[in-house]
Structure formats: C-alpha cells, structure tokens
Length: 438
Ligand code: COA
Image 1 (tube, rainbow, N blue to C red):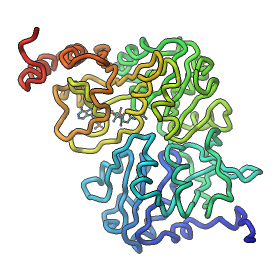
Image 2: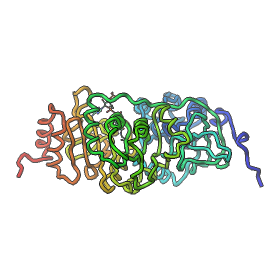
Image 3: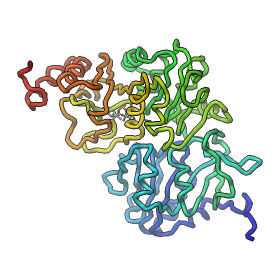
Image 4: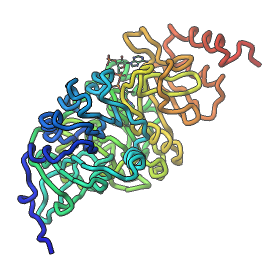
C-alpha cells in the first residue's frame, strides 16, 4: 500500500505548483477573500508557455497579470461568474466572458456543461490543525464543489485566513499539493453612508421587524442599513455574503439569531468579505457557519427562515418591475450573484419580503434609475414576475402581485421628481400603459 504523503511532502513552491499546469486545462479558482493570490500571480510566469488554459473565476479582488496582460490572448481565457473592475477593464479585449448564473447553481451548472470535468482547482485554506484538517475559511460559494470535482487539487495555505466553521473542512490527505503563501488578506472597507443612503436605509429599516432574519447583498446600500436597525431585537442572519456591518449588529446585541427557524443561534453565510475586524470576528467563532452557495442560496432553504428579509441593490428598474443589477446596457458590470436566489427565497418565507433598494438617479442626477424600459441589451437580474419591493430615497413601491399600470404608478412615486412625467409619458407613448384608462 502506498504510504500517505505528509504535509511537508506535498508542499511545493509557487513556481513548482504553477508548473504543473498543462495546455488545454481548465482551472477552477477560489473566489474573493478566498482567492489564491500566490498561484494566480505566479501563473503569469508560466502562461505564455501554455495554450488555451481556461480559468473559472468570480469577483477577483486584485489585478492579475495572467488576466490583465494583452499578450495572454490565446494562452489564457477567463470565464467569470461575477465581474470586478479588473474584468470590466479588459472585457473589450476578448479574454474574459461572463457566465450567466444563479449563485446557488453556479458550480453545478458549470460542471454540468463540462460533464463533471474539471482539471485543476486552486483553493485557499488555513494551515491544518492537529488532526490534519484545514478550514476553507472565507469562501464556500463554489470552492468546495470545485475542489471535490477537480482531478488535481492545489491549496494555497495562508496563516492569516480565519478558521471558519460549517462545511469548511478539508483534510490534507484529500489534497494533491500545498503551497504556503502568508499574504495579508484582501480588505473591502465600507464607506460611511451618504445622506441619500441614510434616507434609503430609513425606509428599509421600517420594513425590518424584531425577530426577522436578514440577507444583505453586495454594494453600498445594503451595507449602510445596519446603522438604522440598531434598536431592533433578536434579528438573525442567513446571507450569502457576511459583511462588517453584521459584526456591529452582533456586538450591539441586535443580532442574536435566537428567533431563527433554521439554524437557530447561528449566523449562516457562504462567503465573507470586509475588513480585518470581520476576519477577527469570524476566527474560531462557533456562532458563525459557512456553507456552500448551493445550500445557503437555495431559495427553498432560504424560505425555511420565517420573516426572511433580503436586501439587494440594482442599477435600473423598469415599469414592468424588471430589475437590472449587473449590466449597464450591453456592458457587463457585475453579475446576478445571489440576488435572484435571495429575492425569491425571501418571498417564499412566511412573513418574508424581497427588497431591492437603489438611488433614484445615477451620475449626479443625470440619469433616472427608474425607467420606462430597460436599456437595450441590459440583463434582467430579477424578472418582473419575481419582483417584490423597490425602495429609493423617495419611498417604497410594493410591486408583488400588482398589474403593470399600478406598478408604474408606484414606481413613478419613488422616482426622482425630475423624471416622473417623462416615465409616464414614455410608458404611454410606447403603449406599455395606454393613455386611456378605466
Ligand atoms: N446607469 C448608468 N450607470 C449607473 C446606473 C445607471 N442606471 N446606476 C449606477 N450607475 C453607475 C454608478 O454611477 C457607478 O459608477 P462609477 O463606478 O463610475 O461611480 C456604478 O454604476 C456603480 O454604482 P453603485 O450604485 O455605486 O454600485 P454599488 O457598488 O452600490 O453596487 C450593484 C451596485 C447593483 C452593481 C451591485 O450591488 C451588484 O452587482 N449587484 C448584483 C449582485 C447582487 O446583488 N448580489 C446579491 C448577493 S451578494
């Protein structure tokens, strides 16, 4: 019988690990805070010797030469579940393409498309404990699924990663190679809320009752509202992304998770992204559990939380109630992520509500975000048949179950006053809402 290789025997240098990659292979990559910084950086030194290597990435937090440099064309192609600024920047050069997905199906659908085949996974983890288990730490969305599926499993060990609980453990014996790279963690500080975000936050807060369970999405507004619910009691968290504001809510005694109907007593999430304050809070915290995106974001799982309130943000909403959160016209901006998953799951929960909150204008008031029709080519993130509640600094529009005429009126009321007549006139001119009404 072959003797089990030890941690030391499996440990390679970054150059040795990157040197294992062959032309034509596909590499699935840990995402956001769980990004394998050393391996991705090192790949730039090898990629020009390779042809047609595909990566599967999501929300890259740094600019990597292997994706950014134009001479990588033909050597590297990046398939991406959620664009960051670095992807937006090089999209027109043709080396990156968005993978449409609902987050809870992201890994499963990608593996469906390849009939389960993934050559390599680059993941990140904490150093192993005395029993040889490592924690996948900050990212469970796709990381564990990709690790399990890959023929070659390479894990970048970073002692700065917090040890998180939940479905996070992998054993050294399950991994082919390890590389050590103890770099500082990527941080995403949240800016203090603007006056406008405070107004929006106030409207959202009115809809969050004691005992509710919250999901907060990515972006300024969802993170800003935590300041406005400091007087609530016994809130719970079941979210995709764990953020700094949630730490404040726990420390203030607002989030206790006591009333949760699923995983009582625990914060549940799929990944965490914030500052060192958040990472310190997560480290060996028995009250927080991370699970795969396919679990946390499954709408049927989300719906098991009574009074589930999801809060996400968007770029445009049209009068049908179609929400675009991921593109500016034809230009890919970010991704669907878990927005539709959580918006649906919240509405399926007893007493739950899906909230989309956005500023009524963009670009210093030059563009209305409430519009008669989505911009040509804009991607629909939440279809009109799934939409629930839209909030701007002018108030709350409840669209669930309402006809298009009533949706338009509700949305006009929360549009910026400068654009209200225009929205109505355009809707009538286009025949979406006829002029003659009974
Ligand atoms: N038309 C044109 N530009 C617009 C616009 C519109 N209607 N609305 C916003 N913008 C511009 C802003 O001016 C800003 O431009 P800048 O970067 O040049 O300043 C940019 O788009 C981003 O807008 P902002 O509102 O600041 O974005 P944000 O950081 O708050 O993120 C989303 C908002 C919608 C992009 C982000 O939440 C997202 O990607 N959501 C989809 C995924 C999701 O919600 N997942 C949930 C689970 S985590």
